[in-house]
Image (cartoon, rainbow, N blue to C red):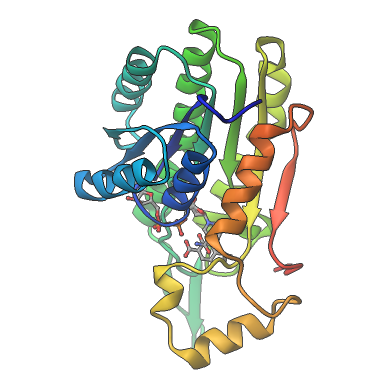
Length: 253
Ligand SMILES: NC(=O)C1=CN([C@@H]2O[C@H](COP(=O)(O)OP(=O)(O)OC[C@H]3O[C@@H](n4cnc5c(N)ncnc54)[C@H](O)[C@@H]3O)[C@@H](O)[C@H]2O)C=CC1
Ligand SMILES: CC(C)c1ccc(C(=O)O)c(O)c1O
């Protein structure tokens, strides 16, 4: 697929990896539909996409709410008349151990609300956006690809029962959608990033950062551009479908 003049929706497009992917794809001529919770961040990201040389429209939407997701993807199809791709990127962290024991007493456990909030955004949100994007792609006769952003935590990371389960779930959806949607000219792929440089890691203490990168075989974190170029590669290669690409510097949890 050619990115020039294609229309790509990105959830969580207001900041971090979502914004980095938006700017990268805009520089390749793609038109962006940026979806997020905050108007100001969306406006800044859209301005950056325009500066990179393309068009961007913004959509305020909570990906965990079915009615909002339905309305958003209907609006995207109406505004652009086509939809060639979705990056299911919006995600949250609410880490915590399942439980803690001290002197034989159980002192802490992951709250149901903590579990549910991550499942709602990181798993149900991906399902809803994938379903609505595919609907609009088929209705507008657009071919293209859906990319689910997972994490190396999908293998099971301590303190991340909720997050690991959600990321394993969105990875499992990749071959399901690749098989179901192939007949409509829609491919589905996943990206599982390792530790990536973000505002969050920039604010970490140097000693903590050093300890973290020491465990990565390539001895550094990935960059947002390395995730964005992987997304572009997926969109541009029409024989890629049903697989995960791990972008993690060879780190295994
Ligand atoms: N930063 C990293 O090192 C890694 C990130 N990831 C994944 O990459 C994705 C992006 O991560 P970052 O850019 O670091 O996160 P971030 O926190 O910087 O950005 C996430 C964006 O998603 C939006 N968002 C959150 N909940 C939403 C909802 N209910 N509806 C709509 N938008 C919502 C936020 O407003 C924010 O703009 C996530 O899925 C994350 O799990 C995976 C592995 C490593
Ligand atoms: C544990 C994994 C690599 C990880 C680390 C950090 C973030 C983040 O800051 O959002 C993630 O989403 C992760 O999956």
